[in-house]
Length: 251
Ligand code: FPP
Image (cartoon, rainbow, N blue to C red; front, side, top):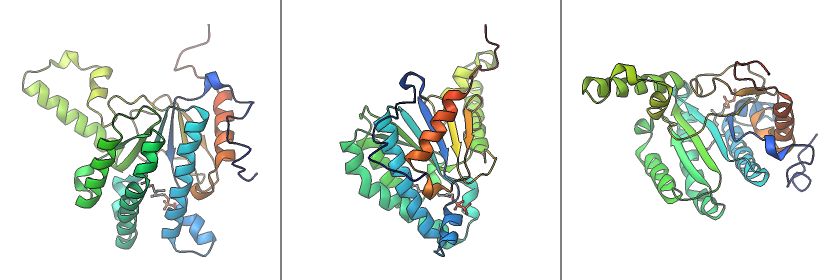
């Protein structure tokens, strides 16, 4: 099935508007393989990956999904060839600069999660500007995980809580899930209801380890640049057929 944006502009009739995920998270895998299959350099796969992400963001907005989180760069991705890392950093910066006006027009609120301090200074500046400018937008919340690692996020939350205990600001008995969540990068963002991973890999890859505890996981063999509205529709259909029990039994 190929994407037909005019057909899928509105929420397909066989999806239940009342049972859509509020928050969708995506592990955008397969850019490199997509490029290789076309006989193109890997970096062109990332470029096409940006187009797929932009369309998914629009689709979420069109279909009434309130939050989208995308895994753009993991703490492990620094281990890629230097020229690919440099390309990705420059791509993020360029996309942010080019898309800011559009995000304002479309009422998108963009946030970044991860260890942002070790990103290139010019990218950090673009990130700060986009977060600041879109801060009051009330439409879809778009979170980009950049230099993100789930274990690192949990460790920095532990450190920050330990410091508060050491300073006598809180007692160890006060540490519960709600308090812990306030120390994560994602404080204030709801947990994903649906986690999508492309390219057929069956892994979480250090993405939102705490937050996906009860997310429904959908894996497709489609490579990320080919992930279109028709694919997203299939993921949502599968999601709506799941029975979410959160560890309980049906009464
Ligand atoms: C994984 O494919 C993809 C990435 C590491 C980069 C994804 C980033 C984008 C699509 C750009 C997002 C941009 C902004 C500003 C939000 P891979 O290279 O691991 O593919 P492979 O497994 O086939 O090699």
